[in-house]
Image (cartoon, rainbow, N blue to C red; front, side, top):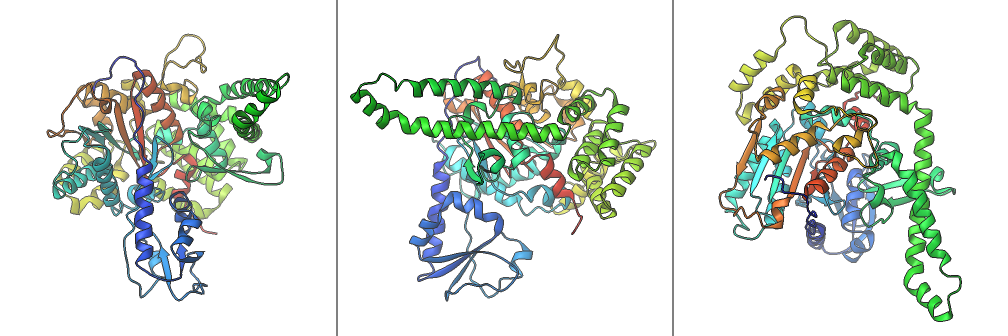
Length: 579
């Protein structure tokens, strides 16, 4: 799809049907077991389940009590037990002699334009362990979306996992004989991308409001727990963060420097609306109370929470030398003052600020510099192990395997050999061998890619964060997210033509496939709706950047991700240290 001239972006499809389908199937499965039953739920399914079917719905279908699945014997009092678990060996070892059914729960809509598979382990399982078991759920999720909102006219992608997922999805479509063909689609195009195509963006500190909230408080399944430091009380409050929150929806994609000013103005406007009560007669007051007061009180509550969240973020970031960290990151992205940035990382490690943060900065240095020179690698690794403990030796092994923290090899790199072997070993049966080899030999080539795609904006004077000119605003004007730039370029060119050198630097596995059975009608709104699929996680910074691009180009991006991620989650997935 070539981008049209700027016009209003189309409305997203109604993804509420995904929740209803999941709920109806769960209810059907519960009804197959008549009578009272206790439901045991795996810990990481509790939040998604709450978004699909709350306790009252479960109670209506004879669920007596809810328990978390644990390793000790089940405490339930009913004669019948129901277990709701992911297909994991470690869980199934504690459950025996059962009848198994599949709850086809692949997709959880978190917002009007975000769908999550809630599979945070996907990143480690696939990119580190070479485990392909989650590719089938991805393909089935695409099949479901295609049947409900497609057919998708064009599919683009890059990455080995993206390619395998797309091929399996097409196989499933052929088996189902193309259900939904001939229908007018609601989504026109799909773009699949592996997380390892762009590690840099995920490693950068987030500075848009939603990203900062995630980094600071951890958004889980679309909700966040604001503690007493935010609520100004002795209670914590769970807040659903989505487009229904009138305050949040206006600041979620803004650079943090613009948020306080907006909230301050919003507070004054709200006060002015309250002040209108003065001088009202009885009828006007009655209308005000019945029609407006409830909404104003709700808005005031949300405004207070977001102001509290901003103040809490400011306190924590000031304590963590956030500005100095951002400055070091920008230097790494631009390729300047590398020695100074390395010294900053060493100081960070020596002060024992945070094991996760220290790892993140080391990985960002490695990725942007295409690996650390042996002297720096050994020095940083030694200092880290001395500061945070020798148990992290396995963590360094994992980071090297996945290509996040590598040592530059003396002389010739493995790239030429890797290229030959990759061509020989392409069949699915040998996939794990190829993945493992690719990870060990992978070069990031970030500097060359950055230059080719113009990821570092060159602007005269100061970058205007209140009136941004491009997607770089999500990182303070210092860097355009690589993942988002690739998507922009491919959609603009309607394929990979002209991007051959970039594809080579990204280690290939790109594809562009048209569905000949789908009419390509430029007048259809669906031609301006793009489903972007992130395999291995998507950050709120990338979501904000593509939302900005959508507004600029008059199109709508829908986000499907295996899970919402950030730098801390990525690092935690690699850590092997055990208490």
